[in-house]
Image 1 (cartoon, protein in one colour):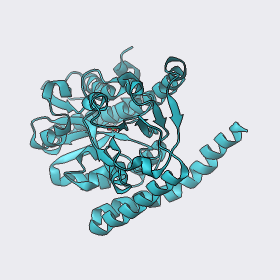
Image 2 (cartoon, rainbow, N blue to C red; image 1 turned 45 degrees about the horizontal axis):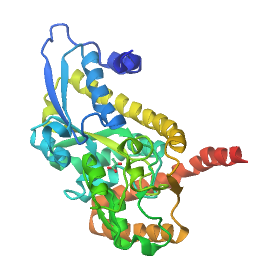
Image 3 (cartoon, rainbow, N blue to C red; image 1 turned 90 degrees about the horizontal axis):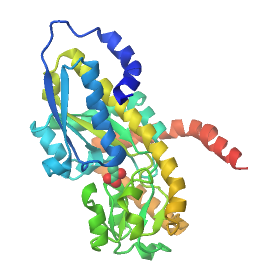
Image 4 (tube, helix red, strand yellow; image 1 turned 30 degrees about the horizontal axis):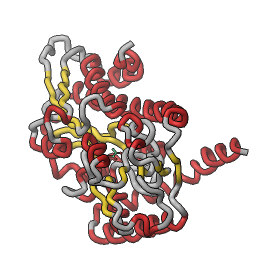
Length: 356
Ligand code: PYR
C-alpha cells in the first residue's frame, strides 16, 4: 500500500467537511517545493513526498507538487528566501535555521530544556503556538506549519570525552538554533553547517563535534567512525521540522485545495513523528551490536548546570530586547508549567515504576 492509500481514511473527515471538488473543476495547480535536505535523506525526506502524494490523491490529481532537493537547487539554507520570493511555492526545512534573519524563528523548532514533542504539539495546536508562529512569519509573506518531529534528540557526537566545562572551551561544534547560542556563552565555538556537509566537515577537522538528530538519522551518516562519544540530549527535546508556504501563492488556490494541502501537511508531519520514534528504537538496538565502539555518555552535572544557567541568562536578554520573543517564550513557559504536571504523573511516574 502506498502512504497515501494508508492515510486516506484518516483524511476523509476533513474532505467530508469541505465537500467534493466540483466536477467541472479540472484545472491542475502545480506547486514547487524546495527541501533543505539532500536527496535520499532518510526520514527527513518522507514528509514532503508523503504530503505531495497525499495532496495529489485527495485532490483527484488537481494538486501536483514537484520536489527539488538541495542537490538540485544547491541552496540548502536558502529555502526561506526562495519561498519568500516565490521562486518556490513551498519549502521543507527547520524554523531555527532562520535565526540570522529573525531571531524569533529559533523558538518555533524546539527549546533547550523545553517541551517534549507531545507537549509541544499541544502548545502548537491548542496552546496558541500556531498563532504565534504566524505572527513571526507573516511579515515575510510566509506561512509556517509543523513538518514532522524527530522526538528527543541526542546531544551530539564528540571526538573526546567531555569531563568538565573546560573541555567545551574553544570546541568547534556544529549545532543550530538557541542551543548554539548557549554553547557560545559557555565558551565553545558553534556553527551551523548544512546537513549535507556535516560529515565532511567533521572528517576534515573543521569541527570537533556534531549535533545532528539521534539514532533515527545519525548512524547512516557515519559520525561514529570519527567521534565515538555519543551524548544524551538536553538541547532539542522536540525538533519540529517545518513546511513553508508562500502566502500569496496559497491564497490563490481554491479553498478546497488549501484545505487539502494543510491536511496533507499535518498527516505527513504526524507520520514522520511516528516513523522517527520507530527508527530510533530500531537503530538504537542495532547500534549496540553493529558499532560496539560507540560510547554513550551524559554530560557531567557541572556542565549541565552551566548550560542551564547560560540558557536562563540568554533568555532573559532576548526577551528583554524583543516583545514578540517575550510573548513566545512566556507562552511556551506557561504551557510547559501546566502540561508538565500531567507528563510527570503520567509518563514519568509510569516509567519510573516500570524500572523498579
Ligand atoms: C538539525 O539541524 O540539527 C536538526 O535537528 C534538524
